[in-house]
Amino acid sequence: MYSHQQRQHEKQDRKSSKVSISVARKHGGSMWIYRRKMESFGLRYSPKDRSYRGKISERKLLKKIMRYCWWHGLKFGLEDEFSKRSSDYRQAFFRTHKPAFGNTYFCAYCGRPVSRKKITVDHLYPVAKVHASPGLQKKLKAMGAESVNDPINLVPACKKCNSKKGTRTGTWIITGRIGSHQKLWFLRWSLRFILIVAILVIAFHSYEKVTGEQDFISAH
Image 1 (cartoon, helix red, strand yellow):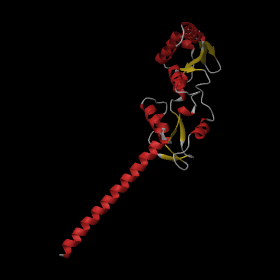
Image 2: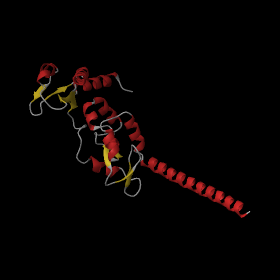
Image 3: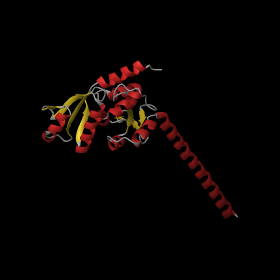
Image 4: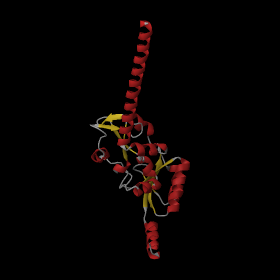
């Protein structure tokens, strides 16, 4: 069990830790009309990308800024290495995730078999959402992820599902988590194949039985 002093140290560490953030218009453009509010938050204007940036240590203030951005349709972002998309996340996925069979992966969302050459690698928790949400970052870290590009947050997806999902979460996350287990899709397709073969065999025997009875009746 933690002692009272350890708890106090943890609280002090959380209070003293600062989070770098940025606020900008979603489709670019001037932030002039928001300048007074941004300055009251302690943020400074960056003419390079027309955004306001700063470091926030208070959780209440951070939530206040996030609510303000949501209400006014502004783009809120956390400036840290954890939520940045890497250039080699696709290679990282293939290093840790073997194909279901041969050179083929199953889409984690629809189960469609796709070759390694054509399969896309999707961030289960979208980069844009993780970049703007301390809560999602905390959730990924609790799962053991070292960054948004951690293999834990990567799943195989066909181009159609990847495009349709976009930055959605909700049921897509649940489906993706379950579907990331390639053996489940392999089992499902195997059972489907067995079922189809069984139906064809039954239909063939039924056809033979009917034609046999017809031949017997015509013979007599």
